[in-house]
Image 1 (tube, rainbow, N blue to C red):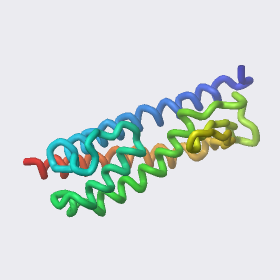
Image 2 (image 1 turned 120 degrees about the vertical axis):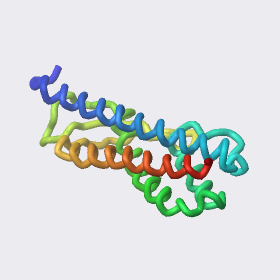
Image 3 (image 1 turned 45 degrees about the vertical axis):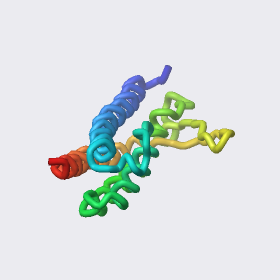
Length: 159
């Protein structure tokens, strides 16, 4: 157990915040995926709905580039997806990384993560500085606002 339980609990709270806000973002993104796929013609791009985040992002980029009714929203969608691609990596690291020591060392937490590369995998170490959390929190909150705005605009295309 860590010598300073409050630091460890704070880290757990940070990761929980990341998970909850990411889930809100991704569920809204799922609605955009469904709407574009089912109602706006993007099923011609992919027959099946994408399931994981990376596939959703790639699908939506193709949809906004190739479905005529979506073209006016292309730059807004691309800006959102470019931002969320960066945040997705941070979220994925914190979610799937394993804490290698429960105490901070030099002000950061150490993690290890398995990355899958083709049919193989490799281990990667990374660190998380709790002082970076306010920026990550702001990025997640901004994504939530932006995905809601885009979702409302996509939904209006359907009416």
